Length: 252
Image (cartoon, rainbow, N blue to C red; front, side, top):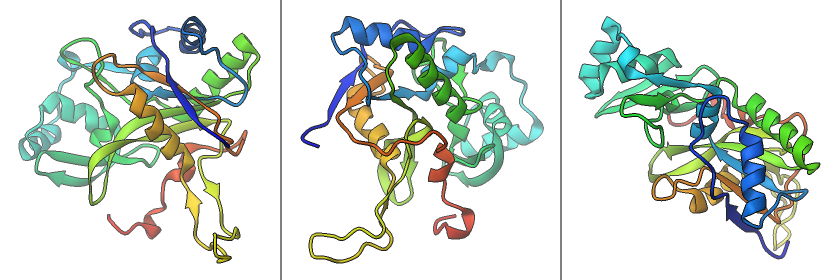
């Protein structure tokens, strides 16, 4: 490949429950002069997906349990927020120093079960992770094909921290039409050495690359088009392939 291009999809309205997200992305891409093409990768933030799916909670309506109140005291977090985090969690991994690291229902280890207050209209509103990000990615991909006839890949992204590294990056929590890992085992490097453990998490790399034009503030662009990357196609792959099994984990 000679080059990879990344276009932020601008001009999208504030996404609300029931909105046809795929149609809005296609229309905005067309208007800004970057209509979708075969082979494009569409990266969409989980917050707008959750808003379109109605996965938003008003903390004013939440009654925290006694356990949530205890956790709130230990973490310095709002009890109502902790209650929502615990409802979305399969278990608590780490707690303390204002941090609450949990395992979500589908195995993702992240802060606050992925519950997000940024880019959600309303002072007391929070967005949950999509119920099934892989399914949603497939639905968006199918809808884009219906609207445009184009064969694209879709990645749903979220912002995550990493063990022993400062700062956050975007990762893929849902994929469709793309294998999230490029397996390079068996290939030879520049000096003829046969690679034995090289498996590149390309869906995470693409999600982070897209974040460079999307961002969390200012314009708050919630979607991006990546063009020119020859990704491995797959109709069956899921983002779950990126979750390392606990028996192989070195940090928890």
